[in-house]
Image 1 (spheres, rainbow, N blue to C red):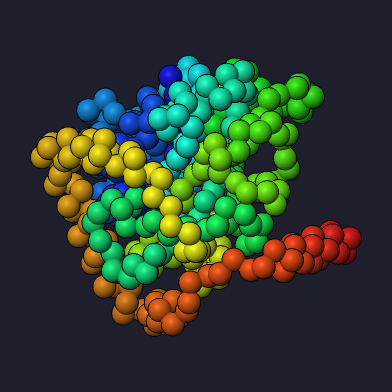
Image 2 (cartoon, rainbow, N blue to C red; image 1 turned 90 degrees about the vertical axis):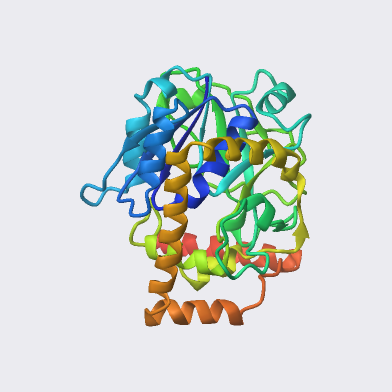
Length: 345
């Protein structure tokens, strides 16, 4: 079993493509937690569960604990996780894009068959000039991405980990698995996005300055079209519910400097699989309802003053540029200096 664990809220238009794509490259199981859905995300997943495609677990918000961490704790005991050979914690706007071989999970693993895990960096895909929300494949609409060599904004080069589920001391984490304290001394083989052996890192960023993505990347469609981004802003972050998704979030991620269509070699099998799912009348109706909900939500948000001005300021802004290498290095060093000073005080 090769299992994906994820959380979703109000993602109805995007579920089918994401599931179809990851099934096409070799994942067998999907453990999906949902909370507070208004657009039928939970109903789509219920139907997919009836069809034997996903495992759907409602995970309503309780108290102040972030729903994503609650979900990961619960997921650890799910049979599709406990019995899995490989586990990947990821989000519905992240697509594992493998460059090795035919671009399937088997090809990734074959690069280093004895690896304990692959630490793969996001490649941020910007809005690509898309303003209107459109019901279509994300991989078709968003093909402009960040360059393959950058360290700033650091949020644009965080990583996620697909790992071998071989030890009871492993706990699920958002960016990488967590080990019991005495297990951290165990030598492990980690492979980076270039296929090179690396080491476990503290934090969520691999800050090397060499080109990335020779072996694989995670296509991160963090923004979508401008209109759809407003819905994301209204929803907030699943693991930091009090953090704003705002213009700063947009500017850190709207990187469109390089055309990258590498994922499109999987377009036809993905599109065919989506079409097959849409042949189910229940799925088709629920997907259409989710699209219409999002359109209504966008219109409603545009009547809110803060959302309207956010929309206007995004339209006024230019795509984010990757700064010269020396400036990226300087910003990162200043950030480290500032954080060390904050710790001391």
